[in-house]
Length: 190
Image 1 (cartoon, rainbow, N blue to C red):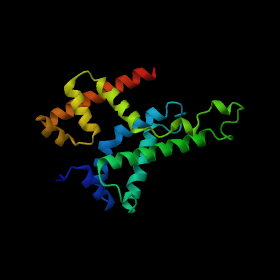
Image 2: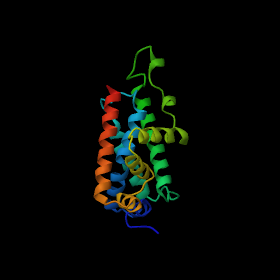
Image 3: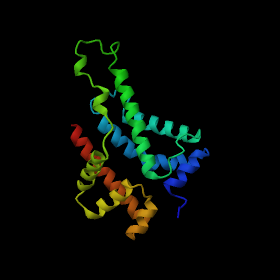
Image 4: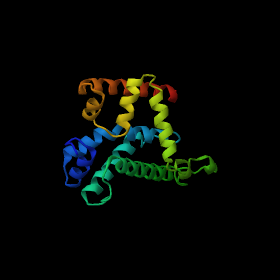
């Protein structure tokens, strides 16, 4: 049974031009897209194009194409996430190619420039390992369970029902998880 807050129903609504459904998908996937972009853009100059630009551009393309009737086979949250990753990786790859073009990188040291091959699509095992590492870094079984369910695409309401907690408690736990992960990413980048 689909709830009015399910990813599947939002996908269908975005196909009809529903801006609220697009906003719901954006809220659900923005941080995940940012994280994936950050992981893939570690060697890319971010002076004119950063993780947020990549996530936003990916999402705009996705919504536009869904509304135009493309991606008809996308029906659930797993297929949507895989599509978003493919679009994101291609966008980053094109950006790397643009930044490392000879006219922008005129040095003889082109071999040291980042190549599109270094931003190859991750395997499902690599994605799984990244997710596992992030979740296990929380060191709290309750937070780990909430993060796992969120990665699987469940809404806050669905998680609250599954864990027999209030939606507000789940929101507080997700805020704590975001804070912990942002702190960890910030410490890794320094």
